[in-house]
Image 1 (cartoon, rainbow, N blue to C red):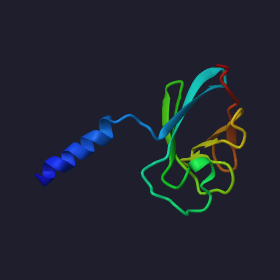
Image 2: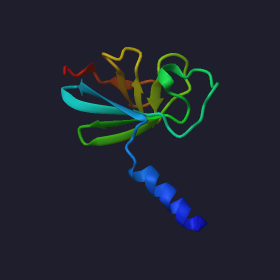
Image 3: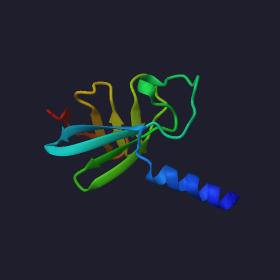
Image 4: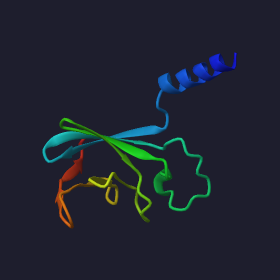
Length: 118
């Protein structure tokens, strides 16, 4: 019985709508990009720097060109930012988010992004 209960709970988490996610559309380097921030499964009441509701455990999924990136939230102060060490996404200016690709020590390719016009 306990196994069945666990399976039902797991299934409900998988097929339930993603009520925690918010999607935004951008144009980056001439191509459409979709960014979906997921708050993660962390119960983070009282954790400092939870700007815009993002907390450690949150992540962003970026879909751009043939890339599907899932970047964890950084622990940097200020506006939410996400990075896997190679790719970087930040929301200092939500109309023009920062999008970078690290290309070696101290070098990064900046990718121009603008919020999509609805």
